[in-house]
Length: 454
Image (cartoon, rainbow, N blue to C red; front, side, top):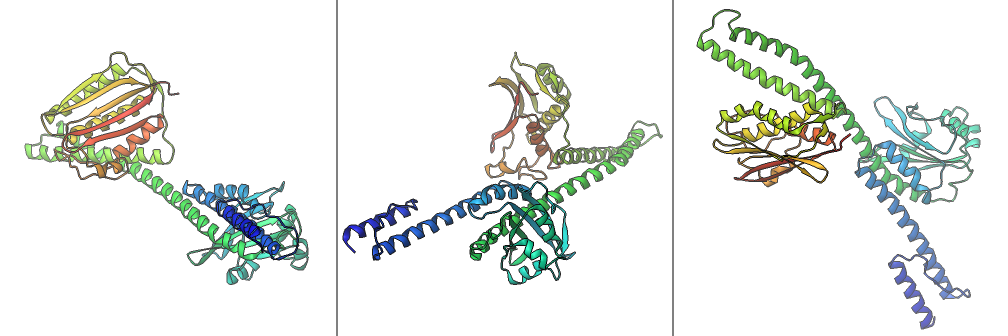
């Protein structure tokens, strides 16, 4: 082999390393150079297919990391996998071990009518799918009508033949060394999978197994979270009424409607009243959080006069600050536009931020409530001169039931839900909230609410 031709092969291999899988190679005769050139071309084509396969799988992995559910992942597979495997139909079925069934969970098909759809199930014992589980090998049927003739009792085969499918490829889905289900590729042509290599299917199925199993677990977590929120909502709702009744009786005692009480009894009743308020506050927070988590937070948007709103709030809250010898100061821009918000919910947000600022501040300090127009929005800030929040704890303050190491200066109690609810309410208004804090100097919460919120 002459040096010129050898250099051509080296250049071709270097181009393949750079991602050009089809470098130019001159093939003129049947000599050794040409055999080697053909082999390099074949390797290039194989590398290209593998790269396509890896890109497609990486794309699907990215989708699952974005939180797609099984149906969304299947849609992505259906739209993307034709470069790797030919098909007109893809179905995913998961194994229900407790009931001994395999159950279809999602299907995509080019067929006009889908005969096997979500919810279809069949016993797995003594079925052909049981054999696939035992062997861990893909099953290829290149002529479904012929297979149906020899297996007339196969209901699933009859149904997909009625859809128009002529050949099929079934791959087991195995995660953490146990079978979790199957992915079915079907084609409207006979012998579609005749010349394809089973090892390619197995590799794809292994990677898809992990993706589908993660997605299935994600769906289960969503269902459990919904169940949790439903339970919290029911429990909180059922607790609110009896606690309210207890509080009303306490008020009757304190106001002397049920007879005279001495100072010791009054002290006990006041303690009971405060604890009822704490429980009712917790219940209201849980009901709010449950409604938000389940997507049932309803906003009643209306035009809000911010000047009147802030001054009304100041008059309501000033006494709470004065009890701790804290000054509540307003710094409101003169010309604030009206904004469309749910005024009760924004009052809830403001109350949470201001009472928190008072709760974590020392006497003889100032809490400043400010508002100004900024880039198509109204910017509202609550700043204190309190303890500040450690930088490594700021990321968790908007998470439900989380608390920082900072403790209230007057022994006040906290549910750990307030700021989580605040963030959700602001986001429901298409707004945003950020926090700046320096330990020993104080904390500032800043809300931005769009002016033209519809």
